[in-house]
Length: 257
Length: 289
Image 1 (cartoon, rainbow over the protein chains, first blue to last red):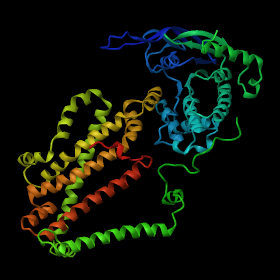
Image 2 (cartoon, rainbow over the protein chains, first blue to last red; image 1 turned 30 degrees about the vertical axis):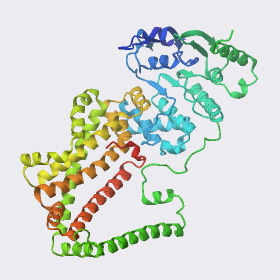
Image 3 (cartoon, rainbow over the protein chains, first blue to last red; image 1 turned 90 degrees about the vertical axis):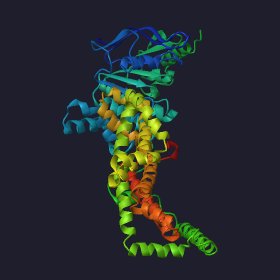
Image 4 (cartoon, rainbow over the protein chains, first blue to last red; image 1 turned 180 degrees about the vertical axis):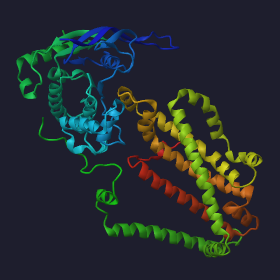
């Protein structure tokens, strides 16, 4: 399988100008290879640098040392064809769902018909086709996140990055959306990195789970999840292999030996 | 794909309504007629009581100190009939309209620049802070020296009084654009112009309107004082002259007229706000005087 994302010996240090305290190291020497079509979760307690790593891969923040290479191109600023789903939906409240998606397609030189087709396609995929003209305030949290996902996918990105997209939702909405997202990504096959603090979520989605530790942020262990994708909660519940993986990841995250 | 859809909060799209009919349907069931009648009746009653107290107080006091509502009303009619009040009122509205519009356009533009660029902010901040703190009415003689007496100088005074509130509140609104929305715009490669137009300015609209409301009040002060001190024209002139002659009835009539100018301006502003930014929830917490 081709490597889509190569994280090479990446560190992130924050200087503290004018303070006597030492610089703060958020991440130290992280290396990771992610194959095309893979679904990777970054998991760990607060302060382990998982969000920092995600933002460096997205180009939103620069690495202090090392580099990130996506499809052969070094990441310097935000690369083309990245989709990002934020923790809060980050939809523009003054635009309809349709216009929020159109916002992403503005710079792509597509014709009006192409834009409309792409939007309709992704709204159908996320089951929002009846809410095209709605404004974000009229949608529930779950639907807003669906719209955020539709927006992330509407430009046909090479890489999808998600930063705890479901953590603000109630448990039932979260589980329903997890299955929907797993189904969508199963169809599209987009290389995906998910940051989550929920071990069950990581086991549900991932091909591999990258367990990170803090002080300084680094990769503790990478756990394989050799279960077929896309998964349903019905298969995971009561599955002994899934349970074993879950327990192992949980003990790593909680530092239980 | 899960069959049941997440709960939808409202059954209609919320946003700029396409027609009055849509807007009317979205309104909750109107409160019972009796309740509306009671509220209106209470307000009318309180105004009647106020006028009554005023009338009684005025009758027992030296007429120079306080003119009764009936005398103010007759003065009002007289001023309309002899052709004084009409042109004065229109002139005040004109000066306010032009001055306020200039203050709004300049203020919003500068506010956006200062909000988006830390360099611009650092350069302009000392001047904005200085003028914000200055009793701007003190600049009136300077304005007269520069532009003489007349429409232009009144407009300039109006602008000078109003523009700072617009600048400061606009800058505040632009700077308060949520970090997540700015990150989102970066991830999807929005250029600076696109960020300003689609993210920063719409976010700043409640702040901008708060600033405009304050600027309107300050500009109106500018108009009246410019007319009182400088041109002795219009409503301000009427106020000054009536005051000088101890004619309290026309004085009060002119003062009330000035308030009407302000109220009309405020209503126009509110109508504009509802059309431009129906999503915006204005709160006085945004206000920076």
